[in-house]
Length: 565
Image (spheres, rainbow, N blue to C red):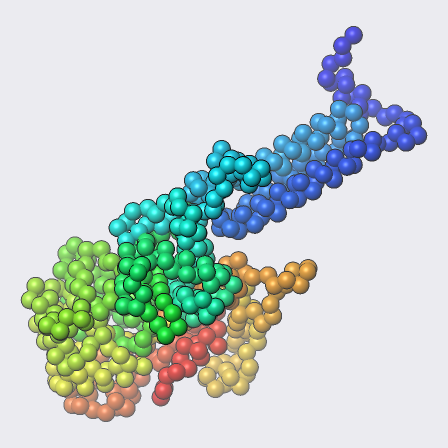
C-alpha cells in the first residue's frame, strides 16, 4: 500500500527511540559543512562584487545575507532524518542561491555585455581557464562605457596587446571616477612612473593601482581613444573622450586629455568635467542673506559685476551658474573664455586662442560686443583694453560679468581699477564685487563631533556658551576585527565629500560709489563695505563650521596662503 507525502512527513516528525549510534548519519554533518562553506564563499564573492559594481551596497548585502540566513533557519527547523533532511537542504539552496542569482541578474543589467557572468560566453571562458583548452586570451572587463574623441563606443579590442592596454585604461578611469577625481596626472617612466589624482581640489598620490608597465599601457590607450598621435611623445597634444559612469545610468562624464613630454617621461593629464550642467546660484554655497542681495544684482538689466578669486577657486563655475540665472531664450548671452570648462546650453561660447598673435583677448571681446549681446561673461581680465571695453559695454546697457584675480573683494576691485585707469567710469557701472574660495564638505557618514577650544571661540568672537560642538574628520582610523583599516564607503576614507564655496560679497551702494569716483583709499572703501554689512571670507568660513558643513582645519587650509587683512 502506497503512502501519501503527508503521511511520510508526519511519520518523520513523530518521535521515535533512536538505536545506539542512530541519532544522525555521519555523512550528513559533512554535507552541512560543505554546503555552508560553499554558501559563505559565494556570499564573500557577492559582497566584493557588490562593492566593485558600486550598486546599492547596503540593500544587496542585506538581500544576499538574508536569503542564506532564512534558508539555514528553515533547514535547521526540520529533523536531520530521512526525507526531511533532503527537503530542508533543497529549501536552503533555493533561498540562498535564489538571493545570489537575483543579485547576479541585477548586476548583469548594469554592466557591459563583456562583464556579465553566468552567461554562455562567461561559462565557456571558465571552461577554457580550467581545462586549458580553447583560445586563451586576456580577459577584459568593461567597467565603464567609454566613447572616443569622435563619440564612438570603444569596444573591447580583439588583439591581446590592445586588450591589455584597454584593461589598464579601464582600471585607471573606473578607479578615478569612483574616487571622484577631477584630474588625473600620469607619468610613464619605467620605475619612476607616477600616478596622482586631484580629489575635492586636493592632490592625492595613487601608488598601488597600476604597475609601471600598466601605466605605459594605459597612457598609450588613452592617447588612441582621445585622438592623439601615439608616436608623438614630446610636443603638447590635446584631445577629448567621454564615459558613462556608473554603468546603467545616463550620467556622461566629459574628459579632456592632454599629453606632453617632461623631464621624467611622457605625461598624460586628464581633466574630468564635473556635473555642473544643473548647477544654479543656490547650489554654490552662498549664505542665504547674501544670496538674496546677489540675486537682486543679477536681475538688474545693465552694469558690471566683478568676480574675484585666486586660481582654482571656482570662479568659472560661479560665472556659469550666474549666466544660467538669465533666460537664455529671451536674452542673447555670450561667453569669452580662455578655457571652456563645459558646454552651456543656449549660450554662445568663444574660446580664446592664445597661440594666434593676430587675435588678442580684447580684440576678440570687441568682436563679440559688435553682435549686440545682452549678457557677456568675460574670463580673467588681462589688461587695460579689456577692462575698458567691459566698462563701456556696461555703460551702454549690457550686463557684463568679468573675472579678476584677487585674494579678497578689495584686492580684486583695486586690481580692476588699476587696469581701467578711470574711476569715474568704474563708479558709474559697478554693481557688485565677489570673492570666493572652495572648501571641502565633511563626509556626513564618518564625521566626528568634538568640543572646540574656548580660547579659539573667543578669538573668533563666538559665544562659547552657545556652541556645544564642531565637527571634524575622524581622528583615528577605524579597523575591523583583524586590525585592517576600514574605509568609509561614502568618501573612500578622505573624511570629506564634495566642495562648497565661501563667498565674500560687496554690494556697491551710493556711499561706496562716491568713494570709488573720488579715488579714495581701499581702507576707506573697506570701512564703507563693513558698514554695509559685508562679511569677510574668514567669517563666512566660520558660519560653515558652525553649521557643520566643514571643519575649522579645512577653512584654515583654504585661506592659509592668503595675505589677509
